[in-house]
Amino acid sequence: MGNKTLDVVVVGAGPGGSIAAKKCSKAGLRALLIEKKKLPRDKVCSGMLMGRWANDLVREEFGDPPPGVLTGAYKGVALHAGRNNSVWISSHIPVGWRKNLDYWMCQKASESGTRILDATHINSMVEHEAGYQLEFKRQEDENTEKVYARFIIGADGAFSQVRRSFWPDLNVDSRAALRECYREPLSIDKDFFHWFFPHVSPSPRFAVNYKDGHFLVEGGGIKQLRKEIADVLNDYGMPSDAKPVWRDACGMSALHDVLLDDSFVPAKGNVLLAGDAAGVLLPFTQEGIGSALKSGAMAAESVVEALVGGGKADRCYLKKMQEIKTVLRDLRSLHKRMGEIAGKGAEALAEAMGSFVEKTLKL
Image 1 (cartoon, rainbow, N blue to C red):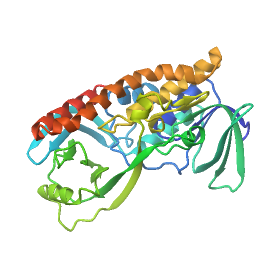
Image 2 (cartoon, rainbow, N blue to C red; image 1 turned 90 degrees about the vertical axis):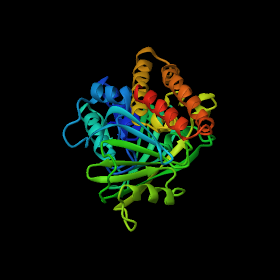
Image 3 (cartoon, rainbow, N blue to C red; image 1 turned 45 degrees about the vertical axis):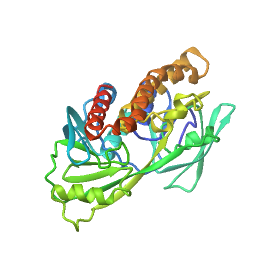
């Protein structure tokens, strides 16, 4: 692949990886973006651009999404606690399929000079006298290649290989998020993203949303809530024998507590973690696009500053990360109180969850 000594290798072609690679390339650095799946690839995600972090950074770093990247916009979020208590929050929320959104961002990174290798498996990442050595193999080629980089940015999700390689002793709790897609017509308001809390508890829960002609049922509690989901969907006209067009899943890691008590520090020397790999998925809403973009941009800025001023990138990055950690600490504290609030009844829980979502939408 030509010159095998690089300034930075970014692992993971989601929003965090794409913005990190794009900003590094724009600063004149030799950047390589590695993605394990063939692009474009899908991801279980609402696809909502919630709040300023997501919307401002997309516009500032990538421009306005062209037709086809987004499917439209929701008029807000509805939260339903039990069967009779709902809170409706009005907000303009652009939405799309992550397959299209992420691929567009990757293309913009490529236009800025980033070399992209998709369908590529990384065999190893180790420290080296030149910085770091990465050994990888592409699906289309059985030959193993090596590159050397001064910096690594790991934006490779909940099960981050970068994190496993450089934080091997970190124990990470994780759970699955499931998604089912239906083509059945429903009478539910298509202009809102709906969260249902059938047990009048923050968890388990599920979401129902309309996107591009499909109704999607998503969440970490789908298996536990089969009867409740069927009852709710039946209220909106779902036939009892309806079958999903497809099902898929992804993993989510639980790193908030270890990140906030500093027993996990998402930077080590010139290896920086961003997005889900760093544990910055927002509590409760599980919003991850904005926090991935925010942390990915910070990681790129830290690499550039380290090259200009000398020294390691971790010090600069961890200083920048205090802004995100302050937000996470506030949201995590609110999230932990949700169970206590639920004990006061469905109305109290719905109102508290509404306030939580409004706070997230302002980020």
